[in-house]
Length: 229
Length: 392
Image (cartoon, rainbow over the protein chains, first blue to last red):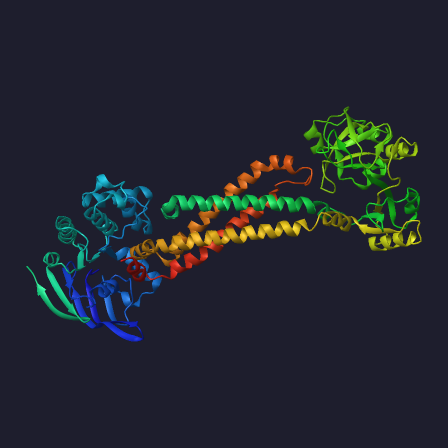
């Protein structure tokens, strides 16, 4: 099954103060399987909305959206949740770890939606933590970790179910340069070694440089693209 | 892990969770105690049978009826047995040691009340002695336990209504200890032969009103109780004292109402306690739900279904009320003997029954549902994007 993303005529609008605000305007875009792309653009250009639609967190008003071979726009709520659990790994700007759980428990959380035994869930989670270099922090709560470590735990959580697509929304936005570089290096590793399709929204030019392709958006439409070697 | 997540989220604010659990435990404990009080007051009414009637003075319960009515009552159609019962109203050693004492016709009374039975291992001649010896008495199990009375002991009772002219206390010898199959009386009361009181008064060795406070009638079932009651009232319509005949249940209810509408009062307090605690738990859960908006968004983004998120929130309310309710129930059970000793005089039937415990458990579940449904529904309905956006 392809783990690419195909978008045709995707439209999304919000009602604000009685007015219709078009955020995505018949967008056309294709992300190839195994691609590592960055979405850039000014605030309000629709980057995060697009990411949410691709990840099934929000619904489009019109258009077609195919992610990893699935017509996401045609799934109902329960199907969308199940599909999301299986296909998508999210990395958020604010890490979004659950504060009352340890690093290991946070990483194990998505595995609850799988038929794995507790023992296997633990093994998988430890492997993911090892991949991000945080095995020794497994018993720490998010409040006991640095920002960079929290984001690495979030990446471990994103990949623990072996999803085909990694969606990262400003993954380095809250990090210092050194931590940001470590997170970006991880995303590159996931793409190059594990062949995950990585789509990252970012304002950070240095982060965007880690992508092979940079997609610029403006006013809900594709403005221009840059291919990088 | 969902259960672990439920528990960890609930105890994220440990002090708040523990205080809410403690307040819910206290509320459930109070409700158990209040319910036990109401049940003890109503026991006589609930356990009354339809084949027993009570004849009392139409003027007042405190006016005795002539003993001569005994024979006339036997003549009423449908009446199988008649027993005189006289309230004695004394105390043991000091006024604080109060328990009920009644002079009764031993044979007839025990036939009318088969629910009264001797405790196991009672002497074989206990009933025979109760029937034949003037100073014999049967003591309720609870009073015997409280004061350490045993068969063969002599109990001195200082009369208040009936006082001996020699200034000495009345003396009753314990010939047996009884318990009840159902709470038609209570297990604190002492019964002694009516004739002992009657003969002592006739001999001038004691002062007090002569006659019988009430008569208990047992019916043979051939005539409806209402007709027997009407015929009894009609029999004495021209005196010397008019009577009022009621069912045993009505009589017991009237007795309870003499100390005010306590059941209503107690139930109202219980209702207030319940309403307050529902609001307190709901407030805690709404606050908790709002604080967990971030967690809700994350769970949904990870692929957890709306139903699971609903369960995580509802589970927290249920966990809170079940732990609190369990603690309250345990407290009610543990304090039962102490309360029985403390309230035994006023509420002799006080007991935390299985029924009360069941009601408390059901109530804990119901409050958990009531307090958890709204925040759970809110969490279920919330979009992941919306939940995540509210935080950042």
